[in-house]
Amino acid sequence: MKNDLRWTSGIAAVLLLPGLCQAASTDSIIVDISPVRQSLTRSDDVVLTVTIRNTSNTTRYLLKWQTPFAGVQAPLFDVTRDGLPVSYLGIQAMRPPATAADFVALAPGAARSSRVELSTLYRMDITGAYSVRYRADRLQVFGRPKASRPQGAAAAPLVAAVWIDGLMPRGMPEAAYLPAPAPAPTGSSLTFRLCSNAQRTGIAATVARHVEAIRDAFATRPLTVDCACTRSWYAYVYPDQPYTIHVCKAFWTVDNADSHDAFGENDPHRDLRPTR
Image 1 (cartoon, one colour):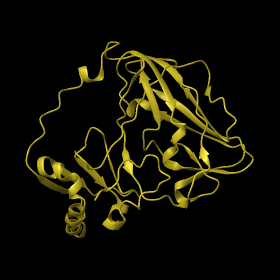
Image 2: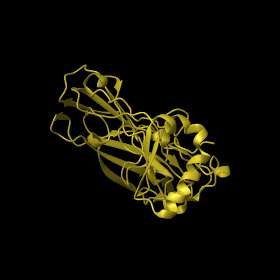
Image 3: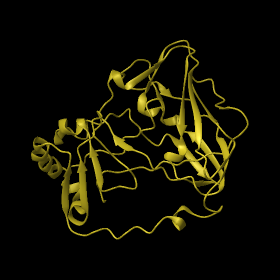
Image 4: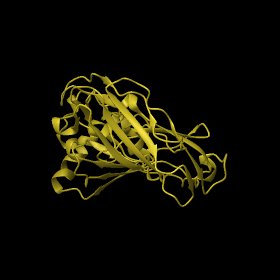
């Protein structure tokens, strides 16, 4: 879609270097990434252990969606296969400004770990040497919850690596084995799914306020708005389903005049926003 909600794609996969891949830094927040296995076959899940550690003598606060602690909700990893970027397949969300509930606290000297199955989030079925790096530059560090500005970013971790004997031969580009996309149907439509009567009444006006930016999509593509999302976000999409917009709670509270200001400047993943 032209000039409408924008999606950034992440990148993913792994090659295992012996031991834990720890950032060589003295910064207060350190990210360690450790693949569970060094060598994988096509039937194996690609799993990493991500550990975030506070090396300072004061409590630090991190935004949950910039960590894997509540599940991966953004392209948190840069992943390449034989030097080529690997496509991110997970959620791309737009969110309201963070509240205190959106932060996770790390006490002085504390560490917290989470396992991430990358093979459900990135396209990883081509044979090759994969490298993965946590996007620590997007992991902002705060001195208190709901602070207006971060104090900085986490230290950049070293790259972890793993070999995958995948379904497809080494060197094959992603585009070569993906099924050809079906021609997009023409004509305009707007489908409501699990929307209340009140939401149906209001959504047409809400969409109309943003139609200047998304007129091409509304004019030439079937667009589905799914109102079943109960998260506190504005909305989210999946990269491979660009014409299905999952509308969440905060969407219904945004006034068009304030739509640009409503998005928190502390969110480096704020690639989706209503446009006038």
